[in-house]
Length: 272
Image 1: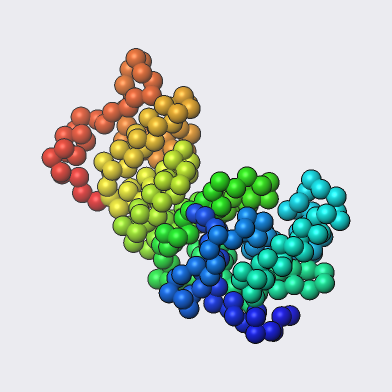
Image 2 (image 1 turned 45 degrees about the vertical axis):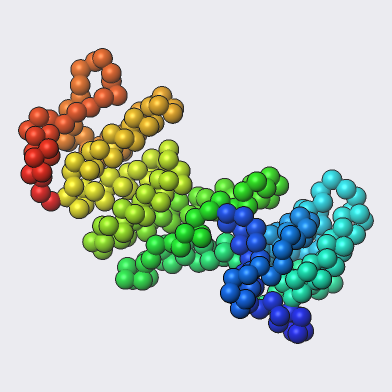
């Protein structure tokens, strides 16, 4: 446990990995703690943000996998030296392990905390909030290390599931406008994700906006056909099938509203 003044100096640091790498000091009005950190230093800090408290050997093997162990350990020592000069206290080291310094915050951890709160049924819906825009970016875009790619996929799935869960819970609480906004966040993050589109359709139906639900369903159907040449799943079709009638054969993808319903929608006569 590093209790030196140097470690305390980084207590206000915030590491950003979503949307790109940066290190900022909360006490310095958002200015970067350091600029132009060497890539080897960035990789070390990012790895520790994602890996927790790994052993030195594990870090060296992960960051320098294509060189002998002795050379990897030497590269790690050199990188730690450069990091201590650029951002003292950001990383705490023991003879065997490495970890972030005390009080260092990481946006990925904040995303996980938000997702945990959304998924915790004991959390009252009055405490549910939309995720901050800063938590919606991809993990370290432009980085292609295997350990980054795996974590990027994990975080994307975690965020998408949390967004859909949040939309569903907000809808149940009658907060339909917020539920729609969260559903669209999931759709923008992954436009071909059917469960996100189903969530949006359900919110429109819960609010009594049948025409909106039908338009959202049709838009997804057309997108899916253009991109993958497949129809939506039965679960999506069943959400709105009771209000749709198929158009005979020329284009099996196309559906239309029954004439009375279409006339009512056009006249603004639909009611919840």
